[in-house]
Structure formats: structure tokens, C-alpha cells
Length: 183
Image (cartoon, rainbow, N blue to C red):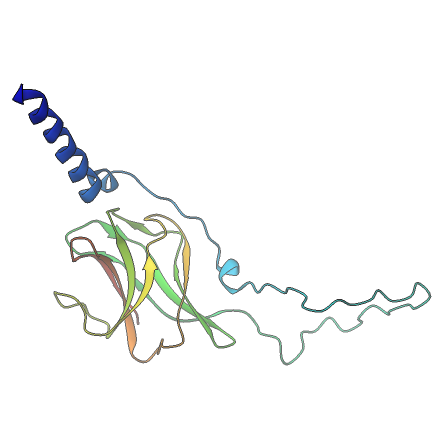
């Protein structure tokens, strides 16, 4: 009589352990394919209604094809660095771009970081990782995927002179997966 309860308890413990530790994440890839232009794309939603011009009004086509002085030449690379694994496999490039005061951290298309459960992207103060949880970091949220190009908008607190490293951190087990010093 006790045997069915033992098997049921063991099955529940195995399922709970699997869901908690997610060992399958170590062997499955989550590819991402975002472009840099997506990171700096702006949505222009009309907030007011504009009446169409009467059909008798002709609007001349612009004759000057030069960009205006206020338009941006596009994103500029501030710093970049290569990922190295910390007790896990990691390769690829992390780059911080700036365009008109907006900063974006981009993992380039060559990104390949060993997958794991509960991985987060942190931008840390300094350009070296020392064992343990960093004292100063910006949490950019969960890692979107372990392979491919992906973008993370940097918050207003980002300071390019202070935040000089990218850390992939496993929150569930409080261990680092990868680090890229930005120079």
C-alpha cells in the first residue's frame, strides 16, 4: 500500500527538481535575430488628427537630398568587447552604440553563450569581473537568447565612463556565465 505513495512522491520530486533546475536549458539553444536598426527605430504615432489638403493644393517635392544638420548620421560605436566564458562556454562581441543621446547594448550576430536557466544581462562598473555579485550594476533584464544578435536599451543611469563590462549572470544559482570587458 505504501509503494504507490512512494512512487507518486518520487515522481513529484523529480518533476519539481526538473522545473527548478531546468537542465535542458544547458543543451537547447534560444536563437535571436534582431538588427541594430530595430534598436534605434522610433515609432511615430500621430496624436492629433490632420485634415487632408484640398486636392487643388500641390506640395512640391523636396529638392535638397542632403540630410539636415539636426539629423543623425546613425549609431556610433562607443566601446566593444569580446565575451569569455566563466566556467561556461561563451563567444561573441558586445558593443555599446550611441545615437542622439540614446545608448544601446548590442550582442552582435556572432554571440554564442552556453544557455542556462534564469540568465540575466548586467552592465557592471569597471571593466573586470571579480568573483561574486558585483557591487554596482545595471540590470537589463533576462537574456533574450543565447545565440545571435540582440539589443538592450540602456537606462538613463548608464554612464559610459563607469559601466565598462557586460556580465551574463544566472540569478537562480547566483553564478556568472560570461563576461565581456568593454574598451
